[in-house]
Structure formats: structure tokens, C-alpha cells
Amino acid sequence: MMCRTGQDPESSETEDEADTDALFIALLEDSAEELYESAPCGYLSTLMDGTIAKINATLLRWLGMEREAVVGRRRFTDLLTVGGKLYHETHFAPLLRMKGELSGIALEMKTADGGRLPVLVSSTVKHSGEGEPLLIRTTVFDASDRRTYEEELLHRKREAEQARAEAEQARAEAEEARRQAEADRVRLADALAVLQQSLLPASLPAAPGLETAVYYHTASPDRLGGDFYDLFPIDGARWGFFLGDVCGKGPEAAALTSLVRYTLRAAALHDPEPATALATLNAVLHERYAASGDVRYCTAIFGVVDTGSRPGHATVRLASGGHPSALILRAGGHAEFLPTPGGLLVGILPSAPATTAETVLEPGDTLLLYTDGLTEARTGPTHNSLYGEDALHAFATAHAPCTPQEAIGALSELLDSFGDGLDDDTALLALGVPAVPPHPLPATKHDR
Image 1 (tube, rainbow, N blue to C red):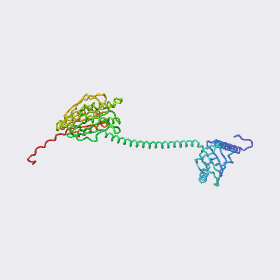
Image 2 (tube, rainbow, N blue to C red; image 1 turned 90 degrees about the vertical axis):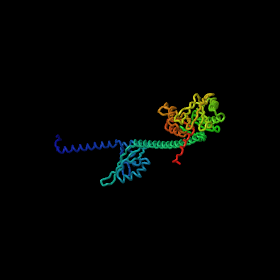
Image 3 (cartoon, one colour; image 1 turned 60 degrees about the horizontal axis):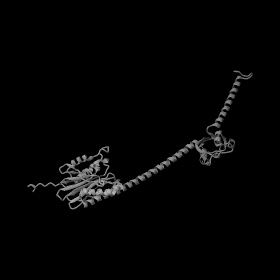
Image 4 (spheres, rainbow, N blue to C red; image 1 turned 45 degrees about the vertical axis):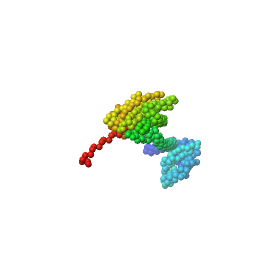
């Protein structure tokens, strides 16, 4: 090792090491000061009374202030907003004196231009060797982004609460509307049921020498049906009856049904010939509707049954206006249609000739009239899968012989079996001559 003349080598080495340590310490102090000034967070030190003794450039830049206007001239609370100062005095300062340190406390500082700076503050009380508090060191974090995030969360929360409240109100309104609609539907159904009943006989009258039964299926309780039927006396031994189906649904169909019923009744009392009654109805409908361009029509089968010409029998004479043929369930155990070909829809043309057919009902025979809701009921997935007249004939044959009540009972069960396939109103009317009761066997000697 080289050394100066006359100088102790060991002494010279010790002096060099001391110089190096001093230089290193100076560099550390410069670096620490630079880090303090340029730190990404704010730093300040205050005396115990709050007077600012030291503040870094970062915090000064945030506040837009000069160091000379702050150090030794202001207290920490002077940098806070009114709300921040109040919180500092009532909560922050007492807790800091009690605990010696606080971390992450939200405050607001005021900037030189009058703005507000949301910050998070952490403070620590520094003590002397004897334990006396000397100063307070505070770290300040800019919480602007956090405040913006919190405000956005609060805004979204309020929006969500408002949306939830609106949804709840909408749900309540929808529920109220549903209840009101259901109440209106019930009232409408009740009104329609009453009106529908007014268009049909409340019950069939008792006709001497005849058994009768009727059934009416309403496809929808919300719509007035257009099927109709009636049975009424003409004179002591003759009874008029009819069954049919008017075009359309609703109030128009109801008005047409009422007109048809009362026209046929009046026509039969004037001239009970079935073809004549239908001709009168055709003229009335055509004159009433066709002239105005609002064509209204119906299908109808009209008949007269006479129980006085042959005791225990009934002569039936009927005519059809575009209606399905009547079906007779014979006492002998078979069924047959009573054709009335050539009949036109009633009300379409000025003149609609009808074909008349006649038959005799013997004891145990039942005459069945029906509307096309029965034969046009769907039995498959498509609209072409209809029940049809052949299936009805087979059904009647399987149940013959039977009384009118038995025939209507079996058919009503058949209608129920169609489910959703039965989408049209259906009327059934059955007339029959009571079967002759079997003669009792003569009493034997043992019976006596």
C-alpha cells in the first residue's frame, strides 16, 4: 500500500475508511430526501399542536401550495375541509392521542383553488427517548380514484334500487291487473252463461208418450255459442222440435240464435209442415241480412213428432237445411241414419227447398239430433283427423238399444274424451218412445 512520507500506514488507512463512511451517509441522506420529496404519496410532519414542520413536494403539488406558505405557518387542520376538520377534531385527533397511530382514515383536504381532495391518512406519534411525544408523522394517499369508484358504486346501487323498486311496482301493477282481468273474466263468463241460458230452454217440457234428453257443450266460457235446440207443443198429440247451428260466435251469433228460435216456433204454429217452417226461416233470414250485405245463415233440422196416431209409437216427420242427418238407435240393436239430402244452408239464397223424411219410432227406439261439433271433433294431431259420421254410427250401434237419457250420457262422456280436440260448441237432442215393459210371468202354485 502506498502512503505519504512520514505517515503511519495504519493511521492513513483508518482515515480513508472514515472518509468513505461519511460520503456514503451523505449519499444516503440525499437519496432519502429525494425519495421523500418525490414519493407517490404525500408526507408531512407536524408538531404536537398541529403546526406543519415538514411537507413533501408531492403533497404540495396536490394542494397547489408553496412550501413557504405552509411550513411553520399552518396547521394540519388548516389543510382540511370544514367536514374534514370537524372529523379530525372529534374523532381523529382523540384516537391518535389514545392509540399513538391511525391508519387509512378517510378525510377531505382543500386545494388552493377551492377544490376538494379525498385522501386516506395514516399518522404515527413519534416519542423521545424518555417517552415524550415529539411530533406526528403523517402519510397522505390520494383517494380520488377510490372516491370516484365509490361514487360510481353508490350511483349504480341507487340505480339498482330504483330499478328494483320500479320492477316491484311493475310486478304489483301486473298482479293487480291480472287479478282485475281474472275478476272481469269471471264476471264476463257469468254474464255469458246467463245470456247463453236465455237462448236455450231451461229444461225440456214433458211430452206424453215420449222420453227426452238434451246436452249442450260450450267450447269456450268466454264466447257465446251458436248452437240451438227446442221442443214445444203444437197441439194435443204433436210436438215440434228443432236443432241447429248459426254462423259465427259472440253477440251476433246470439242475436241470430234468438231470431231463429222464435221464427221457427212461430212458423210451426202457423204451418207445422217441416219444409214449410224451414222455408219461412230462410225467407226471414235472407230478408233481414242478405239485403244489407251482411249475410247470416244457419244449419237446422226441424221435425214434428206425432204420438197420437199409433199408441205406443211415434211418427216423426222432419226436414233439414244443410244439417247432418238424424241418427236412429233402434230397439233391435242397430243404428241407422235418416237421410235428408239436398237441403241448403238456411238464409244464403232467396229460396232454399228442403227434403222431407219420415219414420216411425217404435218402443225402445231413440232419435238423436246433433250439431257438427261432435263429428268434427279432432281425434289426432292434425285438423284432418276428425271423428266423422262413420265413427258416430259405429258408436251408436254399439250402444243400441238405449233410452234418450242413456244415449246422451254415453255421448257426453265421448265428448269429454276428445279433450282439446273438441273446439266447437256441441248440442245433442234425443227423443224416444219408452220400451214396452216385459209382461210378468203368471204366478205359480208355489208363488201363491
